[in-house]
Image (tube, rainbow, N blue to C red; front, top):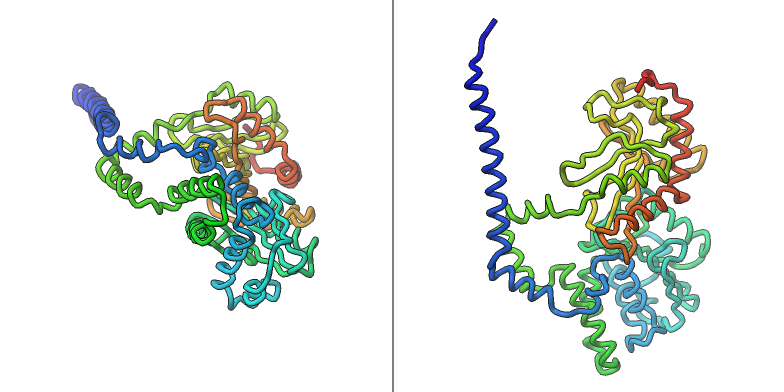
Amino acid sequence: MIGYNTDAVQNAEYNCEDEEQDDADKAIESVLAFAVNNPDLAILEKLLGAFNPLKVLGVSDFELRHSNVLAWLINPAAHHGLGDCIFKNILLDVLKDNWNIKDNQLPNIADIIGAEFSDLQVHREWRNIDVFAISPRNNTIAVVENKIHAAESDAQLERYVDTVEKAYPSYKKAYIFLTLDGSAPKSGDKYVTISHDRIYRIVKDSVYLRKDHMSSRIYDFIEQYLEVLEEKTMKNETLTKICTKLYSEHREAIATIMTYGKPKLPAASVRGFLSRTETESVHANKEIVPVYYSLIPKRWSGIVPTNSIDQSDKYLVFVYLDFGGYEMYKIGMSIKVGGFPDTEERGRFIALLREAANADNNKPLKSIKESKKYTTVFTKSISLNEECELDDYSAIIDKLVEEYNSEEMKQALAVVDRVVQNFGFKDASK
């Protein structure tokens, strides 16, 4: 038997503790150097602290409010003095970049240039669509899906296309996917893309040309909105330079703040969610950021085995709440299939899910894409209520419960539940 030196082991343990303390001290020093008497930080605070009522109202943080302003800007009937020029210019911008797409439903550029859209009707959240604009006179529809940070839900855009096609089969249609960087959607091949940077330029140019026809109050409001877009699209050069300098000089401090500064949902609030949704928590990484919770409906307990592969105490099938993978005001809610000890059994389970989804014509679940470790069966991004503060845990839980009990989540869970109840897992011991 090989012996060992107990003093050496103890010294090694003490050294590890000393190293951990040294790392903590360095992190604190980096944060203090960043936050105390930092002239660059003072300049940044002054730039960001300039009064802007739209920022006070939180427009910059919510897609819903961005969409409200966009809907107002493209509406010729709104009292902004811009007529239909912003709507036409947005439409022309996406059409000129997609003129060669062989889709006879897209509006024709020449027709749009010569058209007059005073009859345009603009709707917010028609059939859950962010912005829906229709001109009966020109037989034209524009559908805008506005994304600031979060990606679209599975099959979300296809559902919107189906809805519009059924309601207005003979209209020319432009399906527009609006993001910060103009990135393409992961689904919805009828959608053409445009960035908030292009919206910024279109609005700025339109306002410059029509300033004489606008009231000073309307002009100031739009200028303040352009300031918000400047920050979101990094068009403010002074702001970009000072942020770049701060990040390069204080990278460690910023990483520490991002790790420890995010709010964490108290255990009592999570228990409230579990009791109201008849679920039970099976795993949570509450010690680190991002925070996530894995849970299952109580009716699955004793039926779905635990995941013995990575010893994370997750079940083979579970509901997943992600408080960190999204922006500050977003929470992810999804249904996932974890790693099965038997890969053939896992493949059979996912195949049965697809069959059940097809039987129910459940489009989000019909598009399941299998992966080796975790397969996302259904996912949605939850926007917190505009009035909801990050430390208003009661409001956050109310929103989570509402979304868990939403019709689309119920339908998705019903499909998965039917497979779970009838599958016959190899090991149902808990």
